[in-house]
Length: 595
Ligand SMILES: Cc1cc2nc3c(=O)[nH]c(=O)nc-3n(C[C@H](O)[C@H](O)[C@H](O)COP(=O)(O)OP(=O)(O)OC[C@H]3O[C@@H](n4cnc5c(N)ncnc54)[C@H](O)[C@@H]3O)c2cc1C
Ligand SMILES: *[C@@H]1O[C@H](CO)[C@@H](O)[C@H](O)[C@H]1NC(C)=O
Ligand SMILES: *[C@@H]1O[C@H](CO)[C@@H](O)[C@H](O)[C@H]1NC(C)=O
Ligand SMILES: *[C@@H]1O[C@H](CO)[C@@H](O)[C@H](O)[C@H]1NC(C)=O
Ligand SMILES: *[C@@H]1O[C@H](CO)[C@@H](O)[C@H](O)[C@H]1NC(C)=O
Ligand SMILES: *[C@@H]1O[C@H](CO)[C@@H](O)[C@H](O)[C@H]1NC(C)=O
Ligand SMILES: *[C@@H]1O[C@H](CO)[C@@H](O)[C@H](O)[C@H]1NC(C)=O
Ligand SMILES: *[C@@H]1O[C@H](CO)[C@@H](O)[C@H](O)[C@H]1NC(C)=O
Ligand SMILES: *[C@@H]1O[C@H](CO)[C@@H](O)[C@H](O)[C@H]1NC(C)=O
Ligand SMILES: *[C@@H]1O[C@H](CO)[C@@H](O)[C@H](O)[C@H]1NC(C)=O
Ligand SMILES: *[C@@H]1O[C@H](CO)[C@@H](O)[C@H](O)[C@H]1NC(C)=O
Ligand SMILES: *[C@@H]1O[C@H](CO)[C@@H](O)[C@H](O)[C@H]1NC(C)=O
Image (cartoon, rainbow, N blue to C red; front, side):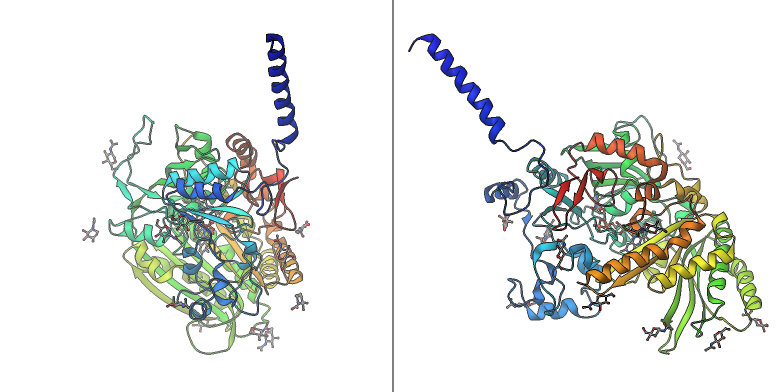
């Protein structure tokens, strides 16, 4: 063989390689995320490799309801009985869904595909295919890198409490962050990594899977607390990334406002620290820009403060006349008083209802009214009643003999003392969504308009709602660390009340679901019109809120979108409704494809 021939053979070979690469390699930007049973889905060997690289922490769980279905591999009648039993750790409890690798609170997000009950169908169709049971940042990193490399839809589940359905998806790899737990580390002052600043305040560093009850009980032993949520099993990951309100927010701001530092695994698989002088864009976005969008939080440092003494009262006003024309005017009057109460230091929750039996007695008579659970910090008991009495007297004189009043005062040595009695005791395990609106002082002044808006919210929804008195001065005056602050909806800074309702429907009925979503949307029309310039708290909002980009993030949206594009150019993390998700859509089969 002469040299020229050799050269031409080599050239030909090279050329053919180039041509065959062009022909056979799939397009560098596949239209859809890979799904099982197609060539794009990784081989069994690839999954085994992922399992090995996470120390054997890859799970392929059965749907949690499968224990109730004969024919399913995990069928077990006695386990099923425990799952469907009322109370005690079953499907209706937050604990159940929090402890399971794939379960979520609100059935429809797994498309009702395996409800616990023989009468229902059961398939794993609505759930992730594989789960990385992460207990370290390195496990999270391995999972994210695998999903990115293999073009697989990835989701993040912590407690699974999400009202928007972001913590479950079909055909996905789930990074389960619930077991990211460690002994919290306390600080008497804190220097953010790489910064030349010492923050002279107590703080605590905790893992992202930490849940409220764990955080509060740990801090209480030190006579301290921090801003956290009302549910026991709500986890820091979803709560902080969404903003996070709490009973003490009217004094200390939102939970996101109290974050000093975060450790995050980025969508491209880097483990980084984000704070006021390092990765500042990521730090901004991770505090209110929404969960599972900018990265996966693995641990965080939060400000703590001395736990307050709490003076509390639960005040119920109610009538057995469910059609009383004075019900909504009375509720509107109370709502109109909440900004002044908040300015005086009062915080808490006011639940209104149109048809409920008393939780305080066995009397089956249905009642309509409101229950206010309010607290005042570090003040004598009389100061709270002095603030409430004029309001109750006004109601008594305006609507004589119409509303019965019951008051239960109580005193607590600490936030945790209050919380152990007054934590969120609602239940899970239904097909349900919530809707909400942030309201400022000026939005609740016109009580006849407010009464009409409350009527629409209550009767258009499930007959009840809740006014969260968790904003006001502390949120308005909060100074989140770092230039530009944090990413929570700017409407929070003008809000006094976060008002919410809900709708639920029978599972596996597409018509009922569509009707319920439409009712929810209509039920919020009145509060939107009261406060067109405000917005909604993204963690507890209508997942189909029209114009959600602006409603959830206001003027922060464009900055968040820019950060999303730069930190996750390939859309490794995708959820709905989440910043920058506009380039993809879930099709009718649940596969995620580019639009
Ligand atoms: C009973 C109950 C009480 C509540 N009380 C309050 C309250 O008082 N105040 C309040 O503000 N909210 C409250 N909420 C709402 C709560 O903040 C949201 O449901 C929140 O999304 C829960 O976060 P999670 O991590 O527990 O849930 P998940 O459903 O596991 O996650 C929620 C979202 O965050 C993402 N996520 C979870 N962990 C991480 C992580 N480590 N890194 C990145 N993304 C992550 C998920 O992918 C998903 O997008 C309550 C909810 C319930 C069910
Ligand atoms: C991962 O490895 C562990 C331990 O080797 C094994 O028990 C488990 O079944 C594996 N997971 C999967 C999904 O194969
Ligand atoms: C069913 O579950 C119970 C409780 O977990 C267990 O004791 C029992 O062995 C299980 N039965 C079968 C057949 O697996
Ligand atoms: C997940 O990992 C934790 C340890 O971090 C372990 O206790 C737990 O049993 C694991 N869960 C499952 C379902 O394997
Ligand atoms: C830190 O704060 C405490 C209490 O407010 C104060 O006594 C102390 O002087 C402060 N230290 C520094 C270094 O600023
Ligand atoms: C907490 O406060 C109690 C009562 O004031 C006190 O006895 C206890 O020593 C304090 N504990 C700590 C860790 O400061
Ligand atoms: C309810 O109130 C309305 C208006 O005051 C009144 O007409 C009606 O009779 C009342 N119903 C009952 C059962 O008291
Ligand atoms: C109140 O609720 C009960 C129980 O769900 C129902 O039977 C009744 O019709 C309701 N009453 C009204 C006025 O809606
Ligand atoms: C309500 O007003 C009546 C007089 O109309 C008065 O007798 C009663 O004590 C008042 N009740 C309360 C709780 O103030
Ligand atoms: C589904 O819901 C619709 C609307 O609520 C209802 O009319 C219909 O009867 C339901 N279908 C079934 C099978 O229950
Ligand atoms: C929701 O209601 C608003 C009016 O309040 C309307 O403009 C919008 O089209 C509705 N959206 C859906 C999805 O029905
Ligand atoms: C949800 O389940 C229904 C059947 O109940 C099915 O037709 C539909 O395709 C499923 N949707 C998704 C997104 O998987």
